[in-house]
Length: 151
Image 1 (cartoon, rainbow, N blue to C red):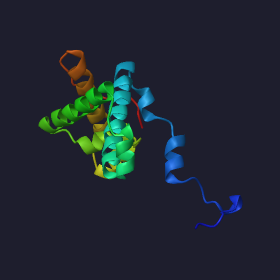
Image 2: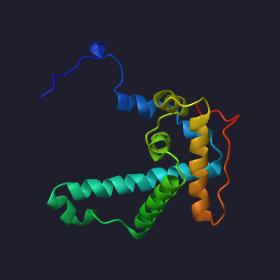
Image 3: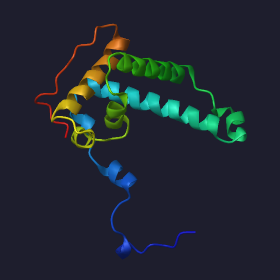
Image 4: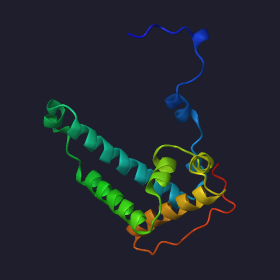
């Protein structure tokens, strides 16, 4: 068991706490793309939760919490279809989901993957636009992040 840590001995917040306190870089996006990001996050959460339940104890799976609602199932199917579309277009899913689902900023993404400045923002916008276009019936437009500051 872990010993109690006195306040004066703390060296700072845990990485999880620091991530929660950080401003959401997606709030600078236009409203339609913000909605796409929220929908992607939610669908990913439902998918991951379902996978965790299946890997967990049988009692938990048998309690009736292992199945998704119809709305959740549709969202998960859309999420998987979106992932396939990104793959078809040779867009890096893992880079984008880090920015959408894990709160990694475009600047951090560019540093980690050694991308040119502005490339992560462009990829993020393109992938969110693809999501929006897939479910609205319109053809996705390739958008540029030039001038949009998401840090």
